[in-house]
Length: 226
Image 1 (cartoon, rainbow, N blue to C red):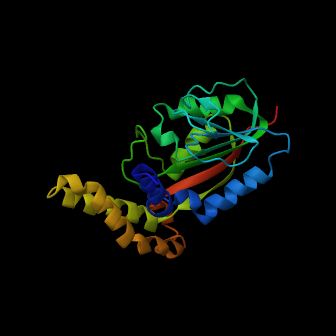
Image 2: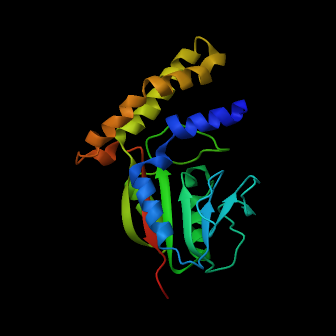
Image 3: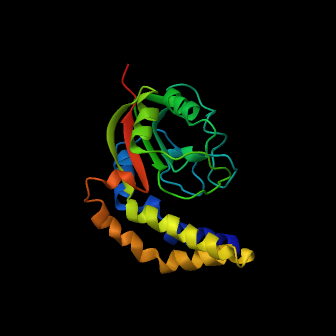
């Protein structure tokens, strides 16, 4: 396994495992289970994720399972085409998320489903760029302004995970002042040492103030039937 693949696996399984959170997995599985057998879905900003053979993948970089190489602001498909669109931790990397959401709305069929997942408390992470962060109200605003009807909104990862991500970056950046080339080594080290902090999400999410420091949110919405 190449160093790049090892790093990617480590990030996915340890540091940035938000796509594997219980709330995220449950909600996405429900959306996919409601996709008709002859339906067509889109994973917008798919990377290496391949959900289902009915779901096509779009990314800015070509790859083995990528069906469309394009930006989210310009989805290369006709109006009212997809039954389901999934986008996970993508719109923060998009220069114009409102235009991207307009494209999502355009290409979804009436009564089609959108699953959108976005970060709130999380450090800068270019992929290849990084522009935005979203509060709960911010996510609702970008969804509703484009005509969607919200069905469900929830925390993808809680404040403990948000604190974990910021803490890992804080100590890694701090120590990199002394030894700049070891920033990524420090980051891997603190990602492991501080990992148990994430378990406190179970407690944090019981608080009525949990939205102040949530790591991120997911939202399920419908395009109204005509």
